[in-house]
Image (cartoon, rainbow, N blue to C red; front, top):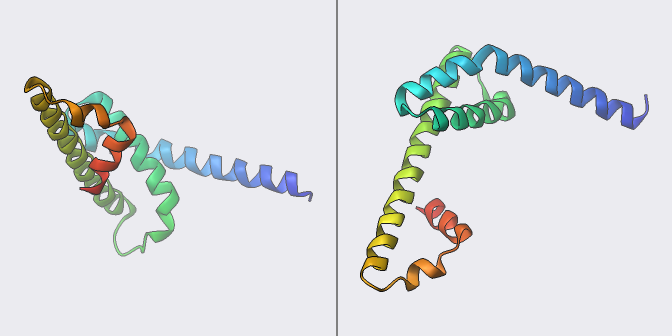
Length: 123
C-alpha cells in the first residue's frame, strides 16, 4: 500500500469514528450544556469543543466508570472553564468601559484582541 493510500485510509477511519462518536453523544452533551448555560449559541459552541476534546483524549478514559460518566465530568469541567473565561471577559470589558467613561481609555486602546485573550487566559 502506498503512503498516500495509507494516509487516506487512516483519515477515513478517523472521520468515521468521530462521526459515530458525535452521532451517539452530541445530543446528550448539548442537552447537558444547554440546561446549565441556557444559551443556545454557547451550548452549540461548547458541544463542539467537548466532542473534539473527547475524541482527542479518549485514550485517557480508564474505564473505571461508564463512558457517559467520563463525558459528563469533562463537560462539567469545560462548562466551568467557559463560564470563568466569560466572567473575566465581562469584568475586563467593565473595567475598559469605566476607564473610557472617566476619559482615560489608554488601557483600552492598547489592548488588542490577542492581548485581551492572553490576559483572560492567564487568570
